[in-house]
Length: 447
Image (cartoon, rainbow, N blue to C red; front, side):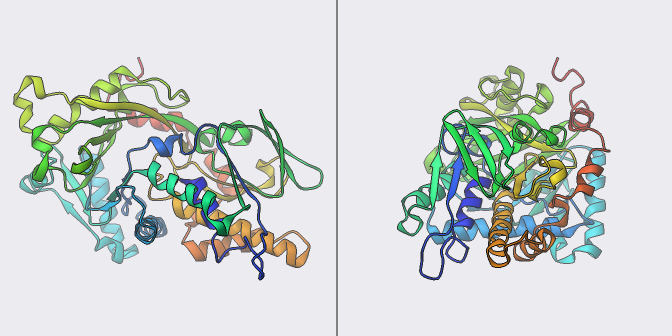
């Protein structure tokens, strides 16, 4: 998703890809280690739910996620993209007392810091209302009208196909699949060399949309962005979830050791329950193998929803477990300070050289963040190139970042600075943070 967004915005009509006479100015090469959109984006469940209350003291994050939602919605409508995008209410179901208290406090804070966002959410604690939202065992829920379900693979495939086949981008965009980048080396002339098994490439600007695999090319990020394997399932709907009884919301499940999500595909296309999570039942942090399933997690995903949704099938032993049409895993990139890294990488962390950019570390929350993060970093590169051509000297990166923030609403917390990276390294590691949370739900996790 991030890479497609970057390419889309680099080559946009109002960008810097052509001069006044329409002549090509940019050569954009995208390297994909596998097939197009074959990583975590193509494997995720299409759960686009902005979490407006997660950062109550920094409402710029909620506004950015909201803007991502509206931008994606407009893009799908304008280009008539068949990706099953459907706007619907988003429900964040809460299953622990302390998580509920945190949500209540966050909503209270937002009455002062972001009243316009606060008005878009309601806190539900009444048992009867929770049952109406199909979460009868939850302690509470935060409900917003701003969420959507979609099929990310189809969206990304559409964007890439358009870039490859459109006459207006002829010769400007080059997609090379099955071509993993194996190393990244700075040159004395200020360029970069990217090594692949098929040869080397020299570029003026390099953008890493590598998420979980960032540290392979940039070792300085080894403890800043860490791989995390997630597991997904496409479950055939039970009778109580078919036809008019299907889900009418997207669902996120939050509790001690619990961070699952659920959407339901269109009825005319199978109505599959796209259910992901269950990380408390198996190894995930530091795992990069997405070719295998964890059996405990798979069993959990097939069985959890009957109870969680309060389905009548719970009284029918043969129907207590969903039948999986498909099950798979994907590798996410978890950020040490829980925010994505977007923008130019400081030379101290990029082999003492400039012109290396990044949009990575989305911590399993990419759908409401990646598209505009890609737009932001693409704008930074465009402005950097324009400044270099106009002035013949190194551009003012701080000014370029600020311009991108104004255009896209990119939160300051997402920008990459030495101070931020140094502060991130002082907090607990990703593994320590994740283990402390997940073991609450299952002390024998990973055993």
